[in-house]
Image (cartoon, rainbow, N blue to C red; front, top):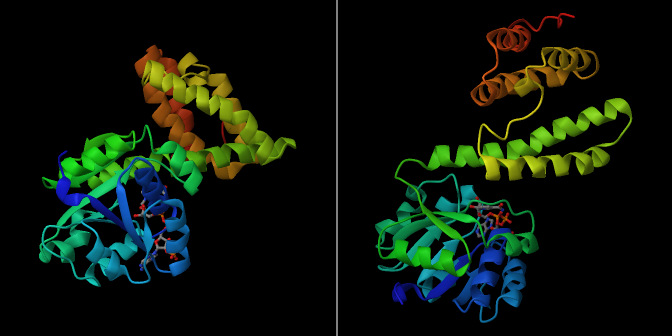
Length: 300
Ligand SMILES: NC(=O)c1ccc[n+]([C@@H]2O[C@H](COP(=O)([O-])OP(=O)(O)OC[C@H]3O[C@@H](n4cnc5c(N)ncnc54)[C@H](OP(=O)(O)O)[C@@H]3O)[C@@H](O)[C@H]2O)c1
């Protein structure tokens, strides 16, 4: 087996991701030896779920006991935590942030440690949910050999798919993740809110809209973009779009900028898919841009 030099794994930060990774790796036979966190209680909780893992009250004890240290602390804590510790040559310090570059581990690198990143491109609200969804997720990796090879092996052990990020790509990689994850939730929240205008609550809305969202995701997987786009924009139904805008203006005007902005983006996809006639395209574009530029009343 490659990467023998990183056999003993330690965790600093016993939160959602740290616990899920520690438990998953321990279950798959990896030596998760030590954990420490801001509070000892969190470390104990993690250790109780990961066979062979010892809780520590000092972060340094984890660094001293392990070959590979995964820093699963909040993004802004990575640099101060790394700087507060003494690292040794040949061991590895790896963070799990999607947004932060390897430079946040500079203090460990200066002391001879190999540095890397190990970012599951997935959303985890709870440890149990993370335990279920680590397998099948893409993990964005950075690091120099032999650490990078070892990180790939860990991803494979977790049932994930390794992706080595090109240098300098991290910020926009993370921006794309935020757009399809957090922004998707915001979009669902705004769409659900519209149901309150006709007397149904957000929970009812979400239960009804989720199967539609799931169908759309499946269609993107099966058919790709732009084929997955459907609806009045693809059909060139200008009257329907106008009716939406008028109703929004009357009952939920705060949604109009979002609806129009996304309408313009969708219009481009609709045209790529269905080759709209130029009149339909111009009419819809005029409706969206006129509102965005002037905020004026939607014409009947
Ligand atoms: N959750 C996700 O969806 C997700 C997905 C991909 C990547 N990540 C990345 O994973 C990392 C951890 O995120 P998370 O969601 O697991 O966060 P989290 O649940 O808030 O856990 C963070 C843990 O770090 C500990 N901690 C905070 N400050 C510390 C310090 N100064 N020293 C030592 N321990 C400290 C906390 O300890 P106590 O419990 O002891 O207070 C907490 O248990 C982040 O870099 C994040 O970007 C998260």
